Structures are given as structure tokens and as C-alpha cells.
Length: 422
Image (tube, rainbow, N blue to C red; front, side, top):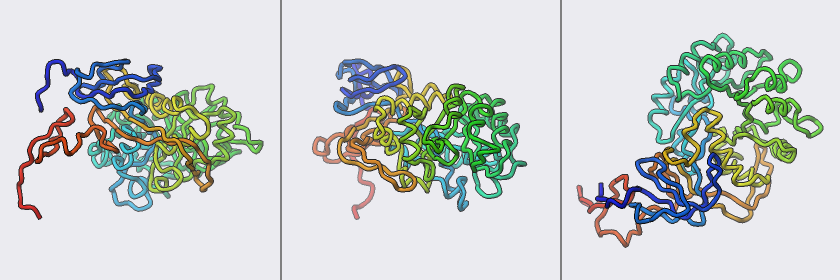
């Protein structure tokens, strides 16, 4: 490590950016200092002489690292057509470049294969990967697996969640085609035993025997999460174009409503009227997988941009992408820039222009602003830097140099040639 003077008590100072920190009700130009992987100070002016490295972020927005609570990242098993396999993506290729530092896998693994998911993905990822465990023991493997009521067992699901407390942050039920309430009821039973929320993808619509209104007013508990809010697949909007009254009642009970965009769960003709009526999401999430990453969803920022295009303020969009999801999954050490918090930080540019945003059927809504991620920090370390704002100019460095990976940001030493040039 390079020598540091006694005055340099911070590793990094992000200077002059517009901080949006909803938990602390800060939306103003502030400096942010980082030391030992944590936020050390947030103030109107911090002496740059106290920092080893100073980065000018004036004109940019500085926020907590984004938290995406609905992704599918159980990749690498080789299983075709399965979210515990080829339908999932490796997280690190999609997160940091969008300012996302934490994701929650939405039920790819059940109690039977969670340990494999942990070893294969969670333990190897630079992204912080948390998980909703599927009520189906075999996880989200499609077909017969997700319709097997006999494999939906509350006790082993809860036991696995308790074994990995803080890593398994919820229970997921999804894609069930039958009219029975059993998947929801058993997921709630497991969630109650493990003291974690349940996320529901309500599967096939049964408006007479299993209506969404009953789900959110009777079956789910306060703090449980209804995802795919704007899909239009389960009578979220009535024929009149008004939001289903059951959703309003569910919100009064404390049920959480999440976007879960995905490849087939977001329509402008549902989202725009609902937003106009005032039914806004509690959290913004992607439902990232191979069927959404190159379609209308694209990435977390593109989904956030859609809510800007529908008139939501940037401060409210950041709230629903940081502090709100942190609270929903009971990870309140994340999603804010309080001194002492982990330094998960994103720096964005808000671009102005003519942009287009498409839904699951390819319908477009025009927008005039778009977020671009310039810089992402995870535990105080730079993990994405679009334009090299934290890096030195090449012509200011020694002729032979290499990046050392030193935690103090810019340490360079003469390179050693270990082989002949090719």
C-alpha cells in the first residue's frame, strides 16, 4: 500500500455530486467520503486534503447502490429451459454496469438445491446475491416440478431459510397453474416459521376460484410481496380501466407491490393508467433472465427510466430502487449512505434527449430523460467505471506502470516484463 499522510483519513472522496439518499431524506449537493469500505462522512464540504483520492462528480447524481429484488441468476447447471439453469444469467455481467450492487434471486432454488446454488453462484459472485427460496423443493425447474404440490413443503423450506439466515431473505411461490391455494398457503407457513416475507408470482389466473383480490386481502401477510404488478395477466386492472379495488385494500393491509418487469410482465396499457390513478409500485425490479435482458426490460436503469417517463420524480425512483427494497427484504444495513454504512454507491448521469421505452409486447412510450451509470462502488471498491473517472491519465504515469489493485485507488508501480513481447 502506498504511504498515506496522517491527514489522509479517507480512501476516496466523491466531491460535489447531487446526493439522493431517501432514508436520510437528503437530496442536495454533498461530498461523500469513504474509508475502509464504509461511508465515513457526508457533508456539504469535506476537505480534499483529507482524502487519498478525490473524484469530482459535480453534475452527477450519487445514490446508494441499487437493490434489485427480483432476478434469476442460478446459471451454470446446464439444465435447459430451467431457471435453475439456462434461463438464468450470471449476475456480475448485468449488475454493476447498471449501478446495482445487491440482487435477490427470486426462487430459482428450493431447499433441495439451494446449497448447490450457494456454492455455484452466491459464493463466487462479486455482486451481493441474496435469495428467495422456492416453496417447491426442486426450485424453479419448470414443467412438472412447479406443479407438484407434494414437493411444496413448508418445514424443510423454513429450515433451510433458518440455516442461511440473512442470505435467504424470503420465500417464493411462482407459476402454479392449478386453482388451489396450497402453494401460497405453504409459502406463507414457511415464511412465518422463518420470519421472512413471501414473494408471489401468482401463476395462471383463476378469477372466480383464486382471485387476486383474495390473495392480497386475505392470504398474504403485511410485508409479503406481490410481484409483476403491471402484467395485466391477473385482473390488476378492471375492464373499466381502474385499478382492482382489492389491490388498494391489499396496500392498506401492508402488502408490498413490486414491478418485476421481466419478459412478459409489464404493459404500458396497465402501468400508465395505474400510475395516473396513483397506484405506484413500492419497489422497482427487473425480473432479469435470458428472456428479458435483450427485450423490453434490458436492465435496472431502463426499468427505472420508464417510471421517470411516466412522471415519477427521480428522488422517488431512487427510493423505490434502494431504501424501499432494502426494508422489504429486511436488509436495512443496505440502501442508504449513513456514516458507517457499507459503501455501496452508484454515480449516475441524467441524460436529456429523445428516448423510447418498450413494454413486453413492443409498444413504445417516448421519454425525454435517461439514466446512465458512470461509476459503481461495492464495499468501497470501484467495480465499474464507465469513463475512467477514478483513474489517472496515461501520460501522467511512469513509462512502465501497472495497476496494483491497491485499495487506495491509484497505486502504480513499474511493470516487470516476465516474457518476451509477442
